[in-house]
Length: 241
Ligand SMILES: NC(=O)c1ccc[n+]([C@@H]2O[C@H](COP(=O)([O-])OP(=O)(O)OC[C@H]3O[C@@H](n4cnc5c(N)ncnc54)[C@H](O)[C@@H]3O)[C@@H](O)[C@H]2O)c1
Image (cartoon, protein in one colour):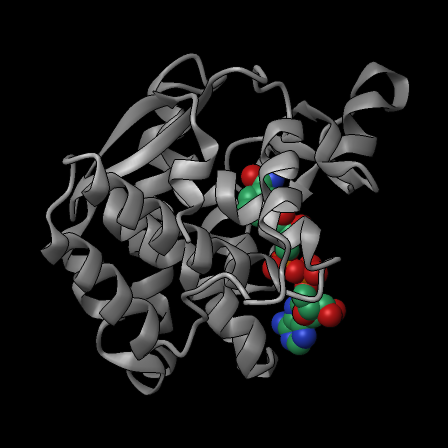
């Protein structure tokens, strides 16, 4: 929100980000996507406006609640799946290991995002890989009326999208299992809550940002360390039963 305010005040003033959650250190503070949600959907008002400096001190995370720390780990798992299998393997060691090794986790996860955004700052191409788990995840987050933390919704989205990737023959069932094991090791949710209406999730997916209603671009895992961008028309197929 502050970044977005900085982008519009006097047509833009400098700002720095001092993230204090794991999620903001490894993801939200990097890449210049600033903005806020509207009741109709996530991130509907915003601008690309990177800070001059990101100051991430992992010792700030010692006061963060367990739930918020786990929520941030969902984005760490995502970065592992996108391009760092070693980071992904670290996530399997569970929360106690993570808490004792926050500096390494934060550094590695930041490095993945920085590499992607430097190559494609305005999401003309591969930056969309960072949306892994987010098309389903944002929809589930919205339909839960934000009862789910962002990372929890993304964890669910990653597994649903990985399962779809396996159904269309892009990923093996081993990849789906690996993602499931890693999220479970971190005690993150892995399934859409039963009571959540499937049609509302699909409607929310179509509303998400500028996505064309007919075809939505997904970042699907192919193996741990590699994702592919795929246009999907049949959203019911993605959600499954
Ligand atoms: N712009 C982007 O590229 C991007 C990327 C990923 C996520 N996001 C967005 O980020 C939002 C989630 O942000 P968040 O996870 O940082 O949550 P948040 O800012 O809502 O903070 C979560 C809670 O933790 C508390 N808190 C923060 N730091 C603390 C600390 N050090 N010790 C104790 N308590 C602390 C806060 O007061 C709050 O209650 C979502 O809306 C998501 O969509 C944006």
